[in-house]
View 1 (cartoon, rainbow, N blue to C red):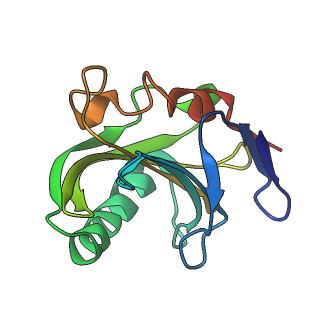
View 2 (view 1 turned 45 degrees about the vertical axis):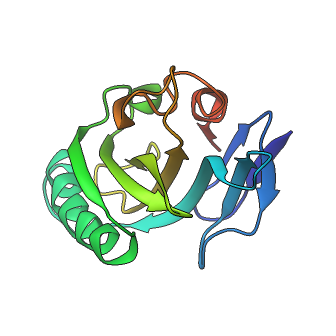
View 3 (view 1 turned 30 degrees about the vertical axis):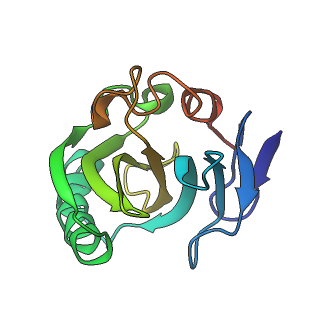
Length: 164
């Protein structure tokens, strides 16, 4: 299956072993997988990101935006614990990216979170992009938030994500 979004920030990605569900409020898309007991196993969501106006390099604007983003996660997510943050270790196609790594609780169980804040190619003052919110239950393959989408079911949508 695949998803394509048009508009001001066009993107697409493909996915397998995940099923479309309602996106978060104001979100673009969300695909998930649940265990036989109904618990969340994996979630991949793409939401809009709009940076405030800035001057200078986007590399300086992303960490400032991320500090506000992290505060909002602390308010919204049950048992949120920040594990790390920084420029995306695997930035998509060499474009600016910043990631937030954390643990949280969904349905009474701990899950690992890895959110990527990404901006498409464009002028150095580009302000609109996406936040990719990835959640995974801990497993032998996924032993920390840093491993989310580096292997397993969520790796495919992240690797196939493209602008345009």
